[in-house]
Image (cartoon, rainbow, N blue to C red; front, side, top):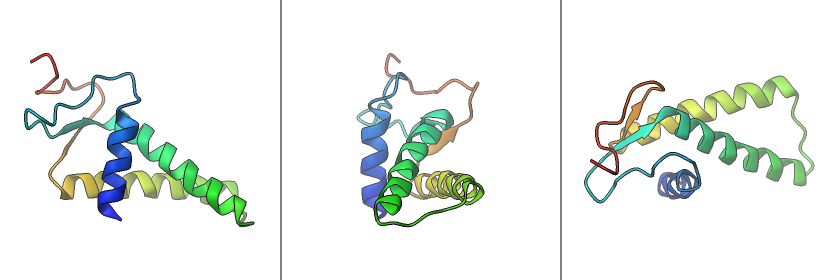
Length: 97
């Protein structure tokens, strides 16, 4: 499951407007905002799949589940060696550099 999440995250980050992370140069930094967007998209797919199966969740459960999903995704990425860079801080290893 971890490998699948990271592959999905990489694919989703490739769709964002931010420059893609430079994995070839060994850069292991991701913007927190990009991780948040990826997490929201992945979680929306999870909730949509549950709805197709007839499961209904209260809005407050969806909000708390989304936050938990984001927090767990960040921890999984950190666990495999990524640094999550807060919004407002510049990546040290951008594509141009």
